[in-house]
Length: 145
Ligand code: ZN
Image (cartoon, rainbow, N blue to C red; front, side, top):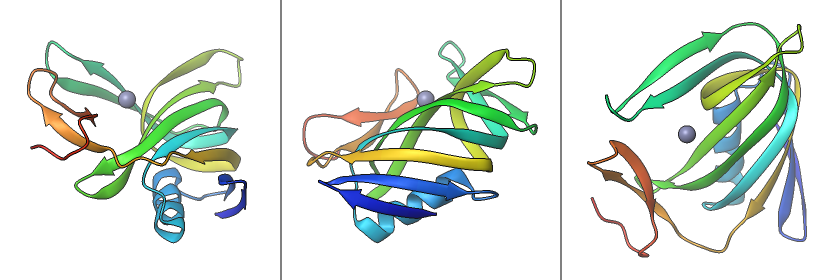
């Protein structure tokens, strides 16, 4: 994982076999960013995707080991238990040119990943919301459990 900064934004390159989340967490640790948005393209493998079933309050998870074009990676960074947490959704392109996607739980880089991170000058924590069953953004400016 390498990155360069320009006018407060970062261009991040992930390398073949880099784990997406641990690389982004390393980036956050090194730069000190805790809040922002990201988007990216490239190619991934070993993607674990999720679909949230609100009625059951749980994710259905599925692993796609094959290499896929990373058509769209979109997400954000906020604080969960005072640590940078990346929430990422993705659309992937298969070798038959079909697309699939979902909430991204984990993935490795198959070829490369080219990600832009734009920091926001905010401190936003996630907190658990019982009725939804997820850690959601708390916009009130303080952490509540
Ligand atoms: Zn999600």
